[in-house]
Amino acid sequence: MKVGSIGFHYVHDRDFLFDSPQGPGARLLLIIKSSALVTLSGRTCMAEENSFLLIDRTTPCSYRAYEDLYIDDWIFLDCPDEETAVFEELGIPFDTVLPIGNPDEFSQLIHLMTYEHYSAEGFHEEAEQHYLRLLLIKLSRRINQGRTANNGAFMEKNSLLSMIRSRIYTDPGSIGPIDSLARECSLSRSGFQHAYKKMFGISVMTDIVNGRMELAKRLLTSTPMTVESIAAKCGYSSAYSFMRQFKLTLGMTPTQYRRGQDK
Image 1 (tube, one colour):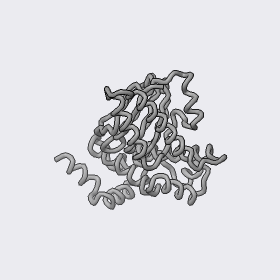
Image 2 (tube, helix red, strand yellow; image 1 turned 90 degrees about the vertical axis):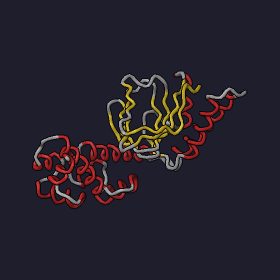
Image 3 (tube, one colour; image 1 turned 180 degrees about the vertical axis):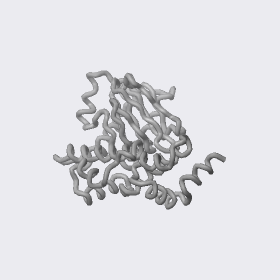
Image 4 (spheres, helix red, strand yellow; image 1 turned 60 degrees about the vertical axis):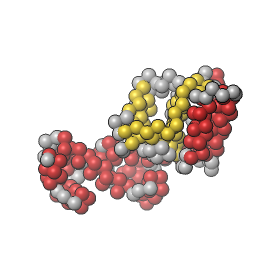
């Protein structure tokens, strides 16, 4: 297994998009340092700040900034199929977004690897290989820390929560009551709310309001849709409820916001 190319702490603006419909062509390891939207084999999910992802070489994929910036460390690995067993041995899955907490120790190793990769000093390839092996071991420790026999259910729940959050921000009008969201995850209402806040650091209701407001602002500034139509599109049962929430959140009415953007 060799490093084909590598990048440390790359910062991209909100228009950044990596899009590879046929797969990246090599195994691609990402330390995602800012929130992002990731699509793997046609399924989109939210990658929270400080996530890890190992993409297989033929997996159709894309990822982009969720907010203003996209920041990551990345490694394209020249890894023949017969050498991929190392990932299975270490419990590092392909095509799965995983939270890793503080990424500093991984980034430090990638920083050192980047130096060795582009260095002309003696034994730089050997040094790079040792750093790569150490990186994979440390990632394995972090990913598998605290795993139990029920880990599969735990990962499935996290995946479902990520998909729900992605829908909240991409299609908030489709989001039903909290009870229905809880049923999607096979959780009680209170259990769902607790798990959601623990995973994302924000309540689900706050996220729903934020998702609706972001969509409303886009529609107000980019379409001639009426306030009533925008309210329905954002998932509000009445224009009054929408206008009340909009003014409470942004300090102005939807009409005032639209006029202000036209100036």
